[in-house]
Length: 328
Image (cartoon, rainbow, N blue to C red; front, side, top):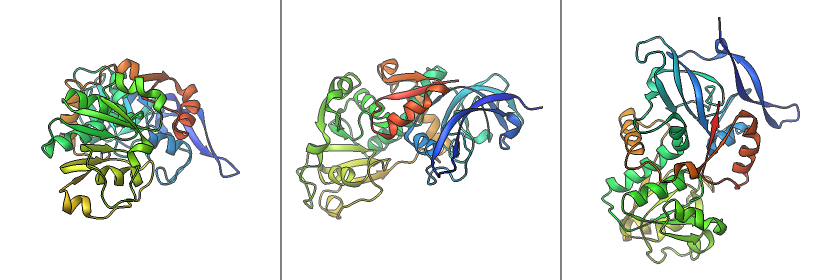
């Protein structure tokens, strides 16, 4: 007999709009998988906000429970990979996209998706970091892999989940991160989490109509795509590198080949959804150690399932900053 639990479920309304509400469900309704997890914390990511608002590019079928991150305790494991009571996390793969996600008190997933709770992190801290932090860590690792050590690194979307954690990681690695933002009023917040300097989005992209811009940055981390990524690539110094992980502004890239063939700039594509397990474990180990974001509590707001609607709207309208964890 299944276990009853609460979940935030998004459904399509008769007029074609979408809305979410807290619904009673049963573990019998969950898909097949080797590991049943009692979720204690989840987090809100941009992809969750899209899923919760009916974006068919993220979630194909509704009703649906979003939540691409989850931390909790193993309730049952059928293949021996984990024991009952083990503290674990799940991020990425199909969780919260077309598989019921962390905005429910239980999830059932394949054991290959599950990692032990990283050393040095509580369950809440792991979700304060979440997919956004994992992505930021992979972006930073990409720059290090290309040989970058120190220097100025531009970070777009700096007040968001990926950007804010990236600033902290880069500062910990001895870089001088520059926060690119359209929210100048949040400069004190950005500096408190690691930004060495702050530049407005308008100033960052000024002159982007040119084939190349003045070389300003040793490297960059971009979450926006579109003209923001093009401007970054055009203004990176010779031999620099840019990690690209998002398309919040646009999936298009209005660019010529000049940055690549005249300045030797490298563009690194970052994906945290299907990232191999060994790379995940390495990144999470760092996130629980040297790369654990400074001021993580100050970076994080907490809500419950009842407060999700407000947080989702804030994220979709660009009013969110830092990270939001959901306590279940």
